[in-house]
Image (tube, rainbow, N blue to C red; front, side, top):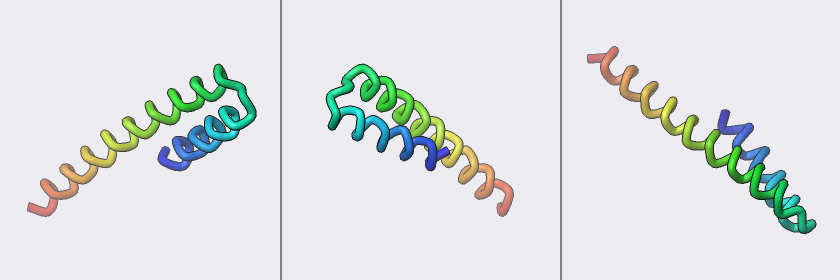
Length: 54
């Protein structure tokens, strides 16, 4: 999931460089959502792992 967030971030940067602001904004929004989903899944996984060891 983090890989897809980074891919969309790179697409957004390239689109912004070439002046495609609409595509850049869309790709940046998707990258942001994917990054937050990744963080949520990571934190839940970390907590579950810590609870399982106890």
